[in-house]
Length: 171
Image (cartoon, rainbow, N blue to C red; front, side, top):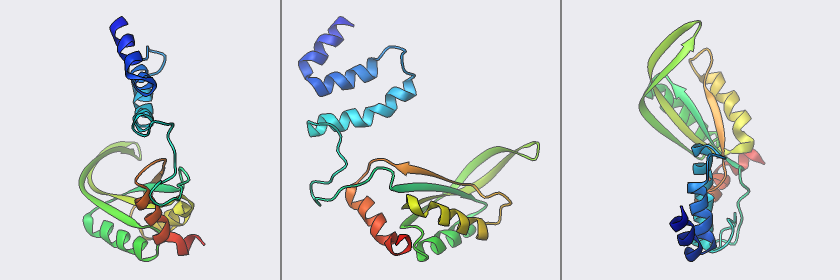
């Protein structure tokens, strides 16, 4: 442990933060420490604290203003129909259709296992309620899975593009 601390001091503040995150005692679970890792790496690369502005474009990104929504479908045909519709309606900028996932879940008191297709939908967070309503209206499942996670960081030109493509719907 002593050698590790000496190395961290010699590497400078950013590296010290990075190493302390990786070697932090059991105060935080491993998963929590790993979640902090990208910010520490970003800080080291930039030489400062993580920023949400893009130097190239001069614009900024509001963390969480873009979301990745996940929807499971019974097959690729249904997934592609829904994907095309949400992009045409500008409820999403992009949909990735990921074939052949296996879902194991409890339904009506019984453990089920099905082959499904996963859609990863990129949209503005403000559009998630409208996206959810649309998916529910066309989805064949009795209870459609629609869950969304906010995007905290990413490629600024891509995040800007998501906003631009879906802008007319959110206005």
